[in-house]
Amino acid sequence: MPRIEEPPEPWRSFFAEVDAHLRENVHLHCCGGFVMTQLYGVPRTTSDVDFLGAVPDVRREITEIAGKGSALHQKYRVYLDAVTVATPPESYEERLLPMFPGAWVHLRLDALEAHDLALSKLERNMELDRQDVQHLARAGHLKPEVLRERYFSELRPNLLAHEARHDLTLQLWLESYWPV
Image (cartoon, rainbow, N blue to C red; front, side, top):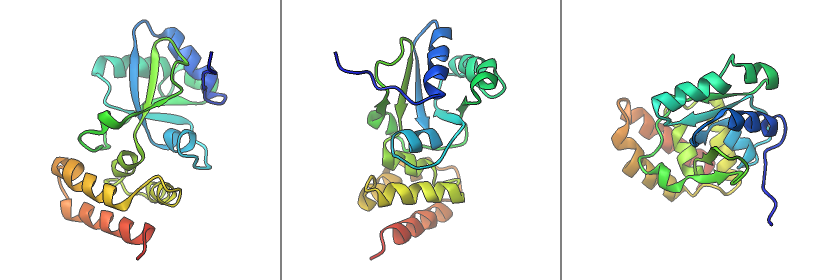
């Protein structure tokens, strides 16, 4: 039987306890620092797992079990955080990547694919976001033409405002991380 890949401590024990609390299957679409460190090898630490798109009842349940301030957060000093402000590309769910498949009974973690993860950081565009995108680019996880195409076809049509600013952000990323 193949070895089941698991996250390092304290995440391993934390997720095992989260799974033990769940009565039904919960599928989290993970983004942010946890994905950057665990899947894409960014050498930094994070104390939370950002996740997108959970149904309100599931989001409420998972936040009570393992959110900021929960007993599990106090015990392990890590927590789950429902992201409500990031805008991922339209078809990101088709490209989700399994993280630690088969490690738990009820809990399933999937990560945003690298281009989708980068584009989910575009609106906020803080220094840490730019560092993450730069790491993804330098490590060869991003292709500029895919990033550009996905931005214009799947993200830009769903932005609520400031399209010109976001267009400029993308252009600056492309010029900075893939100089001609």
